[in-house]
Length: 216
Length: 216
DNA sequence: AGAATAATTGAATGAGATTAATTTATTCGG
DNA sequence: CCGAATAAATTAATCTCATTCAATTATTCT
Image 1 (cartoon, rainbow over the protein chains, first blue to last red):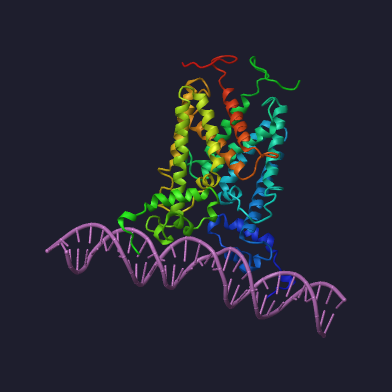
Image 2: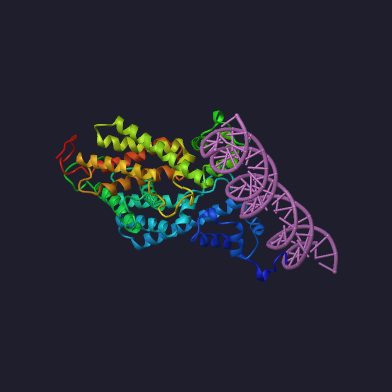
C-alpha cells in the first residue's frame, strides 16, 4: 500500500504537530524521533517530509502551535478579567507561568526554537510570539489608563513584564529556584505578586509626593 | 602512536571545555560535533570519552564553565560598585545581559542544559547558577539596608530580578523584541532601567520625595 | 481507459555518537 | 633493568537516527 485511499487519508501536517505536542508531555524534544512521531500519526517517517522540509521545520511548527495555545489562554484570561486591567495583568502572569509549568518540554521548545527550517531572511516575522507581546502591551496600556505606570513606554514595560514571567518560568524549569523550591506554582504566584506590587507602587497620582510627567 | 608521551600530554578535560566555548562563539551547540571539538583539542573524538561520559556530559561541563564566567563578571561588578548597593544591582543587571548578548550560544546552553549526563538524583546541587542567585540575594539585602524594598523576602526579590534580566536576555536572543529591536544593548539597558525605577519607587518609607542613602 | 500527477512506502545513504579491539606509554614489583 | 599490569589514545566497528531514492499504488485529467 503506497498511496493511501482518500477515505483513509490522514491530515498529516496537523496530526504530526498534535502528536509531537503529546509526545512532549513525556519526554524532552531531543528524545523524540521522527519515527516515533510518524508512528503516533499512523505513517512512516519519510511521509513527514512531504509536509515538512525537515525535522526542524516540524519542530518550528510545534513551536508555533505552542504559542497559539499560550495565546488562547491569554485570550481566556482577558475575557475573564474584562473590567480590571490590573487584575488582567496579574492573572495573565499567573496563567503564563502555569502554562510553562504544565508543558515544560513544549515551553522549552518555544524558547529555544530550532535554528534553520525556513527562510532565514526574516526569521521571526509573523512569529505568534510577537502577537502575545502585542496583547501584553495592550494590557499595560489599559493599566496606564487606570493610573499605573504613568508616562512610560507601554512596549518597554510590556517587554519587561514578559521578561520577568518568562524568566521565572525558565529558571523554574531548569531548577534555578531559591533554596528548596519544591512548590513551583507557589513560587510562580509569589513572583508575579512581587512584580505586581512594584507596579502598584507606581500609582503615584493619589500620593502626595512626586507627580512625574504624564500627558501635557 | 596510541598513548601519547608525558611531554606531549594534553589536559583534555580543560581544553575540551575551553575549545567548545570557543566554538560556541561561531555556531550553535547543535552544530558542534565531538569530532570538531576533538580536532580543536588535538585528539580524536573517542579520546573525549575517557574524560566525559558522553557528549551531554561535556556540554554540562561547558554549561558550568559558562556560569563560572558569569559569576566572575558579577564579582567584578561587585568590586567596582562597592559602596552603592543600588548601583550594584543596576550594574549587575546590565553586565548580565551584556554577557548574554556577547555569548549567545553559550548563554543558551546555560539555560537549556542537556538532560542527563549525571546522577539525576540531585540534578542541580552545586550548580554554579545557584551561586549567582545567592550573590544577587546579597545585593538585594544590601539594597534593603539602604531603604529600598522594605519588608520583602530578599530571596524572592532576587529570584524576581534574576527572572527579569534572564528573561530579557532570552527574549532578545530568540528575537522576541518589541517592534524593530535592532539595538539590543539599548533595549537591555532600558529594561534594566525600567526595573530599577520600579525598585526606586519602593523607597517611600523613609523620605517623602527622595533623599540619598541612610541606614536604620 | 490511459497518461500524468500525487502520496507513501521500504530500501539506501550518510552523519555523528558511542563502543570495541588494538596499540603504545608508563608504572611497579621483582 | 625487565616484564607484567595498567593507562591513554587510536583506528575500526556499531548503532541510531535523519534524510534521500526508487518503487508502488491512488487519484485526477483528458
